[in-house]
Length: 227
Image (tube, rainbow, N blue to C red; front, top):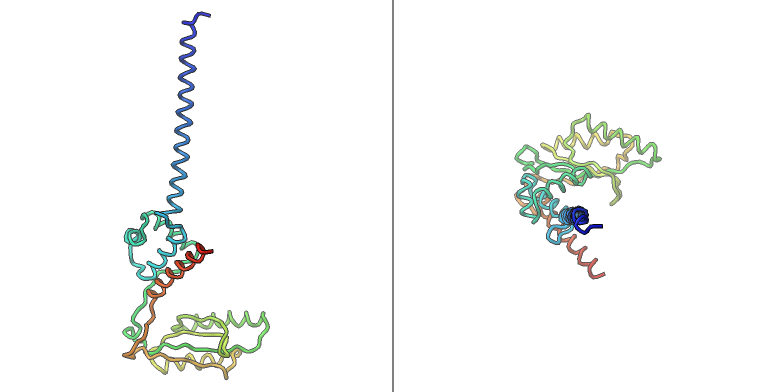
């Protein structure tokens, strides 16, 4: 065969080979780009996703009014990372709500009460009915309950944290609890806090807890490294 006749064919084959190599190279770079992008999402300057979540939670506990841009600067990650992480924490229920802590005394509340109670010996089904009844009654009565939970300690198995305008309004709750037939009326007691007291040791705040959260995480990482 005439060598000159091979030139156009060789030219076509060579061009196709070059195009294949170029496409493979471009595909490889695309994959590497995606991997690096995902790696950047999972790790920002050596900070793992878990660390980013803890730092974000800590900053929000200190001040939940800050923008994602401010939070990103404080944590040391990008704004999209903060937005994405915040959304994830909300969906998972780790962030339950955004709120603030008021000065209760300036809102007219003079007493904060920690009321402890003991339920009578009930079987599991009756205890569940009692729990639902209590929750429904609380909704109907419109009491200023901050928390109502079960637990165990000092001879009690339930606790209520509430705020009151005065002592008489607190007594209404106390008397109401004694009317509940599934509670032991002889085992209801309270610890009262005067919200107008001029001496305070540490008022209700989450700022210190936010700092402790990061310290605990740091200690955990250190112990894992040592292990």
